[in-house]
Image (cartoon, rainbow, N blue to C red; front, side, top):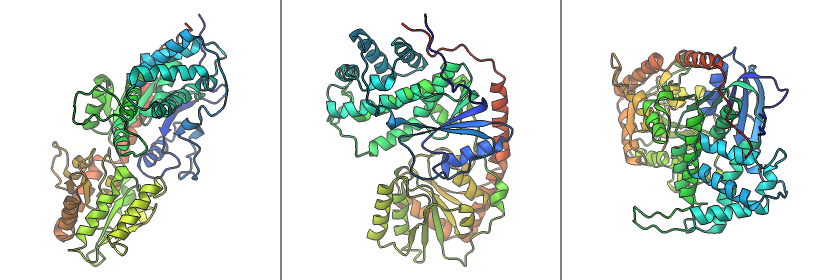
Length: 513
């Protein structure tokens, strides 16, 4: 039997932790990127390397300077895979076996399925060329076989391009060289989770997953809203229709990839209990699950000036201008609210370049509603320089985990109106076991509810005593339960425990067949 050797980068210095991140650090400011930057800086004696996954090369400059304890930054471009022309001959039997194995991987997933894919590919020989295979007549035979089995009711053309995107990303994570590390730590499932799962199975070194939001839920929302996916199957109102469409294909694949990451991970960290329920539904072992809440440097925000009654009433949505933040609901709420607060100022403080089309739609909505003097899209800002202007902070997101901006505004004594997503309710209203109970730090609303958001903001702006009390309650809650010192200590202990662990047997790949 032959063994496919580990393709960890030969000669590269070993680091303590290899962070695997997708679509964020160091190019997208705020959110998960800010957390990653905090994590690295909170562990100054731990050395890191970073693998940053993107669809294609990033055109924007880095928004974060890499800390001194980062030894290397690697890039993996998923959509670049398969662009190099090539030809590779595969026997018809190999095509059939590989198609079946890949079909299992994108529909069911799991660590065993990923190892099976590796075995099939290793069986093609030591000089196999994945890009050549991906562009070969054999690949055409594979996609025909998988289409006929999995989605014969949909457009073959649309299926073909979805197949190339899903499997191109999978093959890219299988082909790239792995940085050498004592621990692999992915910050999501998806393709980052696949690469981390491969690292665990190939090297035997421990792998940790930290999920802020549930990746599969966020992708499902994006897929439901996407207009680039053509629906070819009209299921009407039939709940039991077994026919699958392209949206089903994408959702199933991301769930399969998540299942793979959960099974391979040695420990699965999330921010709050509700996330764990979603993880268990996709097969995560309850014994691996752990909660570590995010924390912030409270002192950096506690001394900031507070907005006063003498200033123009100002509300702010602090976040990226992308569909999942539902900025349009915030704009609609501002339109309703200005009828009772005529001098209202509503700021959208966040980057507008991630989804220029959606940002353009938001600007159009502002213009159409006649809100040019009320709503302002500021672009990316240093919120520490702007929080002193804000009377009420707002999030209208469709999905969140534990928003750092909620903690930052809270530490600055700014009350918050947020949708009932992620940990927002617990941070704003407090946990059931909070002793003593500190009081409400704002208001929680429903999703896509401009009327409810406007009423919640108006209630705080119209009652100065209530607004200040909410700000004090939120500040005390953040100081007590969500400090960076608590979170940094938890991750320091986590890394120390797994760095000392003995490597597990390698499972990826096992042997040529």
